[in-house]
Image (tube, rainbow, N blue to C red; front, side):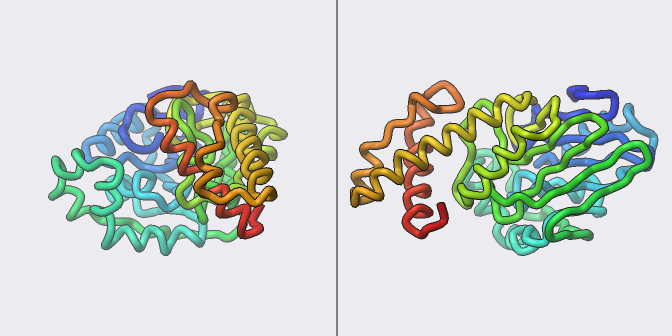
Length: 277
């Protein structure tokens, strides 16, 4: 587990999402979950070396399976945005489908585990903002949308650390399948203005605020180039062929980037046509 500050620790080695922990006077507060039982046990063993108290709360940054499916092995004292409930309920009958889309080999290897996994719904939800005052630490949760319809960020002002969920990732392009680009860009601009030393991304290495700007510029350049073609009446199929974003990617180009960029451009086109941007 990586020590970010004296009170904040993050595990980035699991195949799913990053899993964070804020050590507080009332017990550890966990942010997101491991995917597998043995990973949850490993995380709990590491926690025991940091705090003698039971887990106080588990916060879901959003409803996607890789951020929530390990809750049954940690605690049922869970917190999420109101909008996450329907997405997490969906996993009760569709978890296999979701895992197979991204980890087909892992699903086949651990089919029995996944088919019998308990999905833990949030016990506490909120619509806009929620603050946890945990003796010596404050966790400020804010609904932001962007990556998903229920995405939140968690800011710990005493440590100047932001848990950004999948609105910020490192080493890969942001996953945009169910996103809204407008709120996402607005959030990234806001993060750039915050008093932050460290960002814990949803996936990838822990980073500084400079990563935020790279992702924002990528989205804004995509938006501007796509909009110019939309305004010129260029059909979607031609837009997909003409847009090249290699000069503004937030990561080095690789063999996986081209199909992701095409998917991003396609979604950006649709949202511009609908007047969402």
